[in-house]
Figure 1: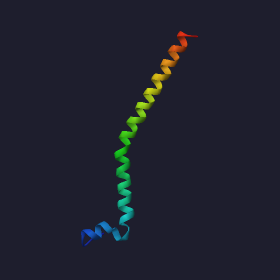
Figure 2: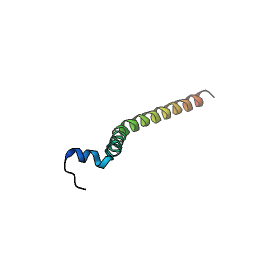
Figure 3: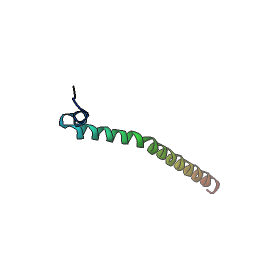
Figure 4: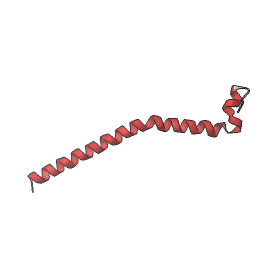
Length: 62
């Protein structure tokens, strides 16, 4: 495609809101994913530690 001005480029033939909104949503998801993955990892580790402690206490006090 050939655009004559930056305004035409950003308008994307009338689909600019959809196109740039999609890019924005994708960028937001990609930016948040490392933080959410780190949080899930910490939660899993904490759950495993609690389970290991519970098993240890169960063995000590049958």
